[in-house]
Image (cartoon, helix red, strand yellow):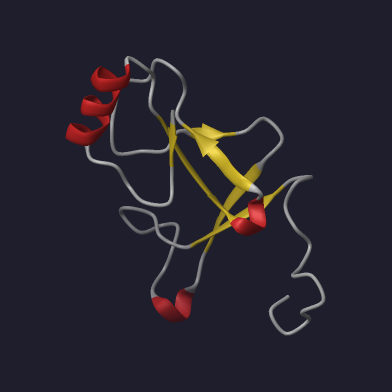
Length: 98
């Protein structure tokens, strides 16, 4: 089973694992990234993270100084930028949003 779009609590994740006798993998992605670009690994029993990136994805945390978002903050903050073959280059026929 795969969950995404919002963090899942440890209690709910454990309940689903027991109820359905199945692994529950957490993922993160956006429409622009064609879904999950990062997922937890099967067998990972820890909570509070979404795992590592897919093999063909590069991820960068970009500083936004005017908002106080810096990769040097503790914890690091910034804009999450993805690069890879499945990442869209822009919005279809919408230059303004691109």
